[in-house]
Image (cartoon, rainbow, N blue to C red; front, side, top):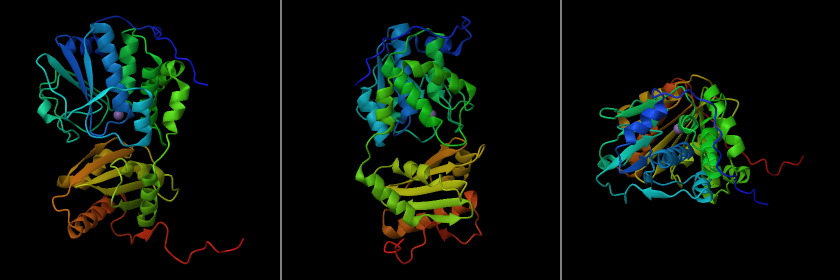
Length: 365
Ligand SMILES: [Mn+2]
């Protein structure tokens, strides 16, 4: 049976009033707006979706201003689609969005100039709230709150809502909680006491049935096709498993592959390159703390494309100027070399993770 929706609560931890709080300065920065528009990175993930929605709720409750949540690129991962559908997120594709005079734009979970957007035509960004180590261009941004020490942008947003004593409705609490949970997944956790405080605040407010439905969203057949190819192609370079998938059914599958491969107890690093349209999507995971995955992937990719991320998780993208199989094979060889050198061992002779051999299917037990 569906759990009845909880009424929005106004309970919040006590905070010291004062204009030095970042939530006050954020609200002051968007106060002049006729409408506040929220943008995030390409293929918005749960942290960026929850953050946009939480800040829009804050602006609506405190400033009584209209808000718009945008979507840059597609949302493909089954869990993320379930989050949008089940929580009824109202998203406007950036390609269809028309900026109006009086609009102020707020970027969450990303920074301008990181190559993770298609929205440069949107114009000036007034505020940035993020937790990525990837440096962006904050020139002309009136308010910036960038906290690489925190696990999730949703943690910052939950804190703003608490500071401003704004009640969090159950579906929004579910979105914020899932945003933090996905950013903290894996081991070692990339979470702090502040992230855990936010989780403790949100959990009683969230709809646990919807949360379970999102976490266990049904998966399309391509998910298993991609995993099969990724396992067949996985090569071990010392403590790195690197694999290649061509084609990826959807760009976020590179991340799903490395989330799966990093569980292997023989590696500390998992990396995947996957061809999607005219792009190679890269994803990296580390199984140890302070791994500098984002910085290292950026070094490995160099001027081939864009990359960035966190300590344990990183992503990147390379545009294929020539889509011919020969050119793709050259890019694959180049990337394999660069990634093996950065995360594994350049001198190691790679081994297949699962060597092909006679089928053991008929072996009787
Ligand atoms: Mn995030």
